[in-house]
Amino acid sequence: MWSDRESAEDFLNFTELADQIGALATTREMLPLSIGVFGTWGTGKSTVLRLVRGKLEDRESPPLFIDFDAWLYQGFDDSKAALMEVVADTLLKVAKDDEKLVAKIKRFASRVNYFRAIGMAADFGIGMAFGVPPGLLTKAGSAISSLVAGGGGGDEARDLKDAAKDAQEGWSKLIKPEEAKTPPKEIAAFRKEFGEILDELGRPLIVFVDNLDRCLPDVAIGTLEAIRLFLFLPGTAFVVAADEDMIRHSVARHFSDPNAKHVHDYLDKVIQVPFRVPRVGVDDVRAYMYSLFTQQLAPAKLGDVQAVLLEALQNAWDGATFTADQIDGVAGRPPGLLEMLGTADGLAPTLTTAEKIDGNPRIIKRLLNAVMLRRSLAATRKMKIDLGVLAKLAIFERGTDADATQALYTMVMAGEEGADLQLKATEDLGDGVKRPQIPPAWKAHEAFIEEWRRLEPRFDDAKALQPALFLSRDVMASPASARASDSVGAAVKALLGVTSINSPAATDVIDRLNVDERVAAMAGMVASLREGDWTGKLPGIQGAILLGEKSEGGKRQLRALVDDIPQDTMNSGVKFALRGKGYLGGK
Image (cartoon, rainbow, N blue to C red; front, side, top):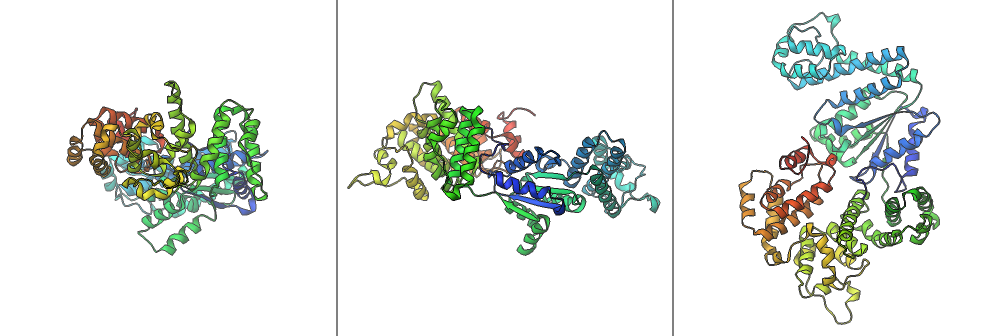
């Protein structure tokens, strides 16, 4: 099994991209500079950021680094203030032995609370767009004064929120003009002090901004504006990892749907040098799986294997390649590795081209985790099941949908006539042999299924697959449910559309199913949810929770799925719903 997180190792030949970004970010003549690392979910953006940092850290005189995960502050803080505070806190740690510089950084940091205070006050409807009176006589006024002065914290912020009404009255108590602070003056002072601090430190500052595309539009835009308005000064570089389309969507939403040209221009102004995570090819996917398998079975040899793989990938233009036997030898020929590498060779073309996989590293890793989990389960039960069989079945699940997968598993487990012919590749049918009409649920996936049939190992005996399907029962209907496939399919479709945990209609749908049908319906739900976007509202999760309340077997399936999804990738509302029904621990 492999962690579903970014990697500090280069399994995808991103080294050259990381080198280019690192060179730009440390060339003083180019600074200040904003660099975009664009790609869709799971393509390796966060890994690129880690590789850039890792390479620059190895220098004799490395730059200063700041990691800012925008998603961590979603809903908890003003995004501009959060980024500026992280920068200030990092500078304080770097300058801890220089008392004079520490004092200057503390003055600089105190200005962050000013911006946070006016941002919070705006949320409470208090008219303070251009100045903050620091001497109010109300409880809220004291809280704002403390924040503006730089000595405030969480208690003062709560006081401000609790006493919004009192604070609103306090704004009428004006102070002398010379005592007032105004945003234009504070921004100018902030930038001036920041520039002086950078000059005294004498080292470039590189800020890595990640997960921006997971944030709500206002948070994403606020973070970008903080970069350009407050922090974009000589000596700084910002490396922003995001899904380009999601950021353009945030721009459109934040500015109330401007025309396409303005959306495009905004991002171009904020990001000066865009890089896109390279699209992977078949050999890239092979190398990725080779690295994962070596990491599992021969971790001490991973560095040697990586060197061979990266050299081959970087010289592919000149015909360089690598083989399973070669890499097995470099790894010291540990038991089982050659079988895994052979499986990788067979799967790589389909994993690269299948529409729902498309060479996505995170999807491939999740798919392999499911395969290895089933293989481990087979070992504990002393079931001899080929790794390639498990992998091929997992690819069918991923490359089709819940209905198509259900049709395959029901066909095999029920021993339906013609199942053997449905599994064979066309060229393996023999002269004059015609395949029976395919299941209706397969019609939308015919091209993929024909490619899947040709994957090794070739299937020609449906009954022989039953043990492997038993291990995959979280996406499998029981034989008893075959007769009720229509009602189960309708129930799955209805439950995937449920948006409330208190839906009477959903309860009625579930009550009409028998025990076996509920298990089958949950199998379909799980297959669909596995492909869903867990960072969003995840349509259907409420229906699955309701179904789990009515079926112990269904509950076990949903729990197994939830355990397979990292909590840090879940939407807060989804986590709340799951935790309320005991699927997640903690508060």
